[in-house]
Length: 381
Image (cartoon, helix red, strand yellow):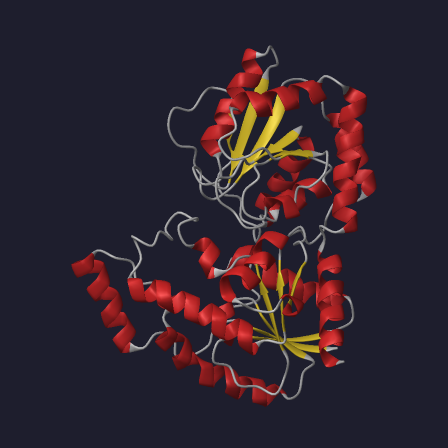
């Protein structure tokens, strides 16, 4: 099949949406398909939108999110249409940012790929509070979502939580929507032999917890500290390894800082792999999230997960190998689960392999892309 992958940014960037479009392009190519990336759409921001943004920011103290401004989207749509015509017919145009499809006129089927609706983000993600946003941006985001979803042939969301919102909040028929979990963002994922080697190294010395997230509070970094403290109180020596951000607040001596760790710097990639391989548990009890791919990466290493039942998390952590209590659960809940399993070596290894099997079965990019290809075939029929 032949695809176009369209985004107003760079779809081949590791930084764009955690590298998800890049991994989709890479995997489709590995599966034998042709993918033509179309990015960096021009013009970017009309002058009138810049003026509005400044007006809301300085005078009304509200946030005017330019990429939810219909005028911004309309201004770069002609560039997208021109470049699609230049590459010729494709089996589908893949779009990983819904507004980019809102006004797009093309004879090719449009397949949307996303993790949440704008309605779900409002008053859920920090920074998306209605009281903080300009009212016309709240309306603009809802308008753009609806326009894109009505225009597309099909929308693939990364969880049933998000897919359900498309019908409930946007009014799109359920047959136009499906759900498929994301894969692990790893160019060279560990083999089963690597996982077996990791298991032989685990369980010796202090219990090692690994936290990886860019936003300390939203991702539950402070909760991870509380959990580690409780584990230590239960008589188990502990280390909490933190990467992706700087810990905030009072940081106990058991916390080990590793910095941001970029995926485009080989020595930092190696360090990241080492943390996944050597840790006993991955912990990210996030307060607000759609479907974090880091849980799939943990599963690839057979790493047991401490998460929370919010957003679409259960699309990524749905088996015995993870604990997902309701947000606000006490540190004792996580700590008791981890210590009980840690002290039962046979159970720990069994759950570790269940995590790995979840990765091999569905938390990988080939599985996601096979679903995508099947959707395009059904749309053609």
